[in-house]
Amino acid sequence: MKENGFFEEVFKVTRLIPSGKVTTYGAIARYLATGQSARVVGWALNNSNYFESFIPAHRVVNRKGLLTGKHHFGNTDTMRQLLENEGVRIENDLIMNFEQHFWDPGKELA
Image 1 (cartoon, rainbow, N blue to C red):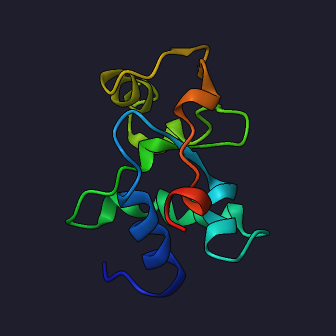
Image 2 (cartoon, one colour):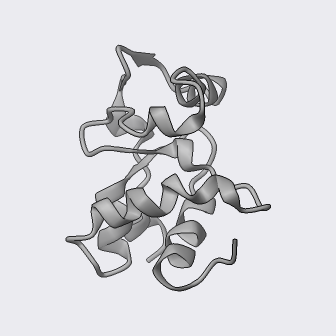
Image 3 (cartoon, rainbow, N blue to C red):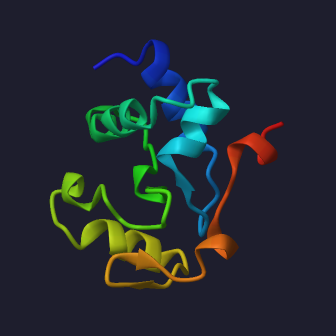
């Protein structure tokens, strides 16, 4: 599958999220000046596993720090395991100390 347009921009930002950090669908949408398209960011990331280059979609969560995209990783534990391997503590699919792990592309990439 070829990357293009908005999805490609989502993938570019997602690839920049450092290990041990997370961001939200909405934060990516706001950074791309499309604040109302958080769901489209989610759709893009749902398709990220069809590309040869690695896109760390596991680092994108909902605005509360909940692992809402976990069912798109083939196994509902994969997203949690990937984040825990990066030092992120998770309980009941919720990132603990969310503010500490939050990476805001609007600030970090400005």
